[in-house]
Every structure is written in C-alpha cells, then in structure tokens.
Image (cartoon, rainbow, N blue to C red; front, side, top):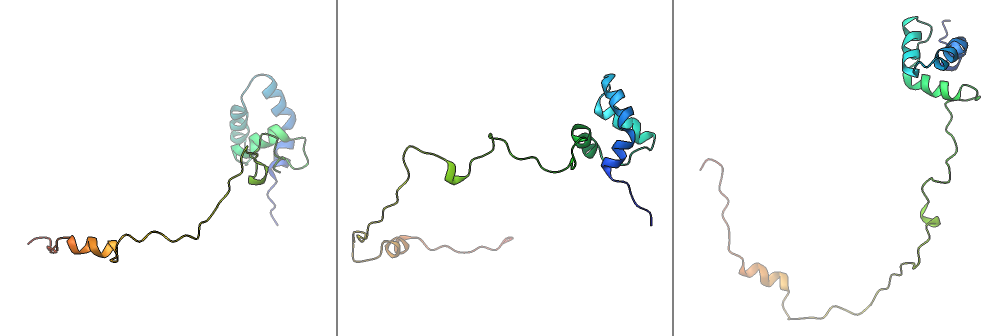
Length: 118
C-alpha cells in the first residue's frame, strides 16, 4: 500500500530548513516554491501557510474559537426599544358597493396581440 504523507509530516521533515530560510528573510511563498521544486513537499500553498503558522499545534487545520469580535446572534443584540407588533381587527372601510379592481378593468381599452413579422 502506497501511503501519501500528511501535510504536517511533510512540513516537519523540512521544519529546520524552513525556519532557517524564513529567519533569513525569505517569504513563505519563496520557501514553499523552493521545497516544491526540490520535490520535498507536495501540499498546496494554502496548507503550507496554515502549517507554517500553526506547526506546534496538534491539529493545525482545526478551526480556532471565535473571538469577542464575532457577530452577535439575534438574542444577544440589545436595542433600546423592542419592536412590538399590534393587529387591529377593524375591517377596511367600504368606499363603493362595487369592487375597485373591477371598476378599473371596465375603463381599460382592449388590446390586440400582433404576431412578429406582420
């Protein structure tokens, strides 16, 4: 069985050299490209950056807990005045005995459909 090494194990194999290059002032992208060209790593650049920043964690790809600047849920939002919905059971006033929509339709002019090309 041919097992593919994990991103973290690939990084740990080059950790010493990577730290040395980063301390010399090389960018993460340059160091990543160097190791890919040497065929020492096969991970994506996104994974490389995550592991370089979090290599000392047990699970460098796990999500961190949200900070206090995270969005508030609806229940946490405090407003000076809470909205209040009220409903009136009074019926709408009747203007005429005829329906206003029917009266509008009677005054409309009829139209003819014209086919394209006629």
